[in-house]
Amino acid sequence: MTDTREGGCACGAVRYRLHGAPMFVHCCHCRDCQRQTGTAFVLNVLIETDRITLLSGAPEPVAVPTDSGRPHDVHRCPACRTALWSDYGRRPGLRFVRVGTLDDPAALPPDVHIYTRSKLPWIALPADVPAFAAYYDMKSLWPAASLDRRQAIRG
Ligand SMILES: [Zn+2]
Ligand SMILES: [Zn+2]
Image (cartoon, rainbow, N blue to C red; front, side, top):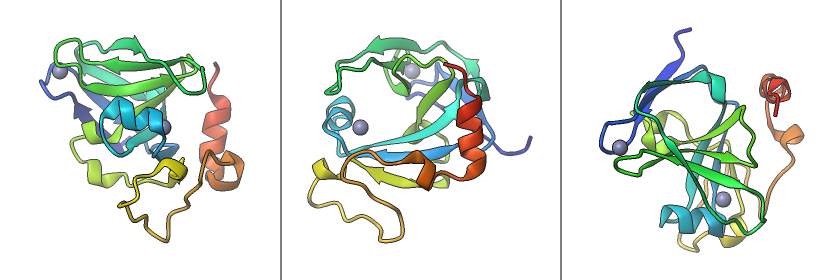
């Protein structure tokens, strides 16, 4: 498979490789993501856990509170604490990888903007990318191949 991408944390202790295209890319403007990142939004690649190869290091899960009450673990470099990816809802087969940790973050622009109801007012969204005030219906937006991959994830 030639479609691979690499990334890592700020200190270099954690390095990883993604195999294959993401199922989908979220740009989330919710208040949780704003607080956890300390900035305006988070950018996440949705991908199967088994398509992530750790090349070095071992990210540690850190549980964070959520507005919804559902579990959310942020996996961070144990040394520099950079957030590499999230596990939402304790679903072991699915990861939300932080696009900013990729060596080439420009390669994966968002497929959707979500929770724009709390988007910071000075951010102008592109007209050609779907945007939703809250969450959205995966089945109406995801490519069929991505929906098949999501279905195939257990847990
Ligand atoms: Zn690090
Ligand atoms: Zn969010």
